[in-house]
Amino acid sequence: MSEEMITVNMTVNGEAVSKTIPVRTHLVDFIRTELGFTGSHLGCEHGVCGACSVRVDGDVVRGCLLLAAQADGCEVLTIEGITDTGEISDLQEKFVERNALQCGYCTPGMLMTAAELLAQKTEMSRDDIREYMSGNYCRCTGYHAIVDAIESINNERLGG
Image (cartoon, rainbow, N blue to C red; front, side):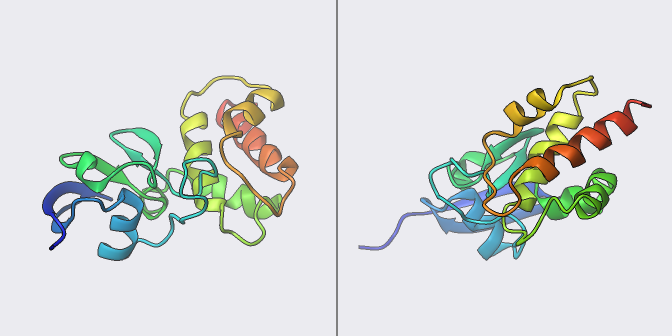
């Protein structure tokens, strides 16, 4: 019995993509194996850790929980895409400065989620940041440095 195939069409990091893939291919697998954007990682494969986070039509989603077919016709941005736009250059620099990354496995998902939070352009407490970022797991940093980096960039962007 052959696997059912489907053709998906979407825009990934500003480029139109059309590929025929197995119907059960998850979005993060499609992005990594078919397109070669390996910044988003497979972690828990249950939508818990956030390592596979990507932006679909403006919202950060778990790429391991979404089938590529469900993103048909959508605009998808990976960590590579938002890096190329410069949207998070200050945040990336602050992650390095504050040592908010160590092994780097969770970092793309952390940055995607932090970018979504920072886009709110509002004052926030450290507890607000922790709550928003609570769906992203890091086993190396202990989170304090991540919160420091996000808080610092938010204050800078708000002019403080």
